[in-house]
Length: 247
Image 1 (cartoon, helix red, strand yellow):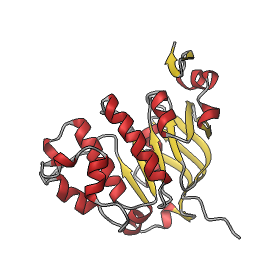
Image 2: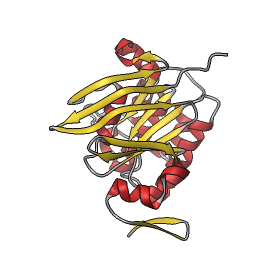
Image 3: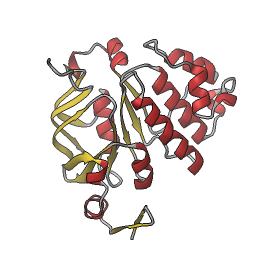
Image 4: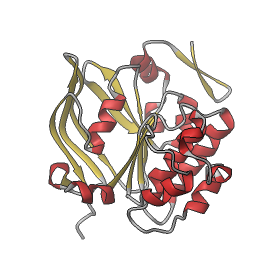
C-alpha cells in the first residue's frame, strides 16, 4: 500500500531576508498527528518560515513547499484554505464585527468542531458577542486560534500562539493543541515558540533554526537537550527539577 503523502513537505527550501540566509535547503516533512514547534533566536527566521509554509509573501525564497503531496504553487487561492490554516503572531482587524460573526466567516471545511465548543475550550465563550476590536491581546490571540481550528484545514500554522497568554492560558492552549492533533481529524500543527517548557507540553517534534541558514529537526526528546539548546540560543541551559532554565 502506498503511504499517504505528508500534510506538509519542503524540498530544498531556502529563505533569505535583508541579505541574510535564514534557512538553507530545508528537507522536512510533517505528518498527521504531529505537533512541531519551530525554535530559534529573535530574527532567526521563524515567522518568515511560517509565512512561506502558508504560501504568503516573503522577501526571497527558493525551493518547493508541498501541501498534501501537491506543490504549493499549484493550489488556487480559494482551494488553499482547504489545505492549511494560518494564525499570525498578532491579528489585524479592520471591521468592528463580533467574535461570533468572525468565527462564522472563518469556517471553510465543515467538520466536527463547532464555534461553541471551540470558544469553550479556549475560555472565550463570554466574548462571543463582543467586538473583535475591543479584545485584549491575549483574548484576541485565543480567538485567532479558534479561527484557525474552525477553518477545518488539516494543516495548522501558528506564529507564537501563546506569546500574549498568562500561565494558566498557556497550559490551556497546550492541552487544546494536543487534543486537536490527536483527534480523529488527523490534523497536524506547526507553531513557533520560545518557552522550552511549554514546547515540551505542546509538541511532539522540534525544528530548530541555528542561524546562517543551518537547521536541525527531530523528536522533542532528541532536540530538547542542553547542548542543542545552547547551540540554538547561544547560552547555557540546565534542567532543574524537570524544568529547563537558561543559565
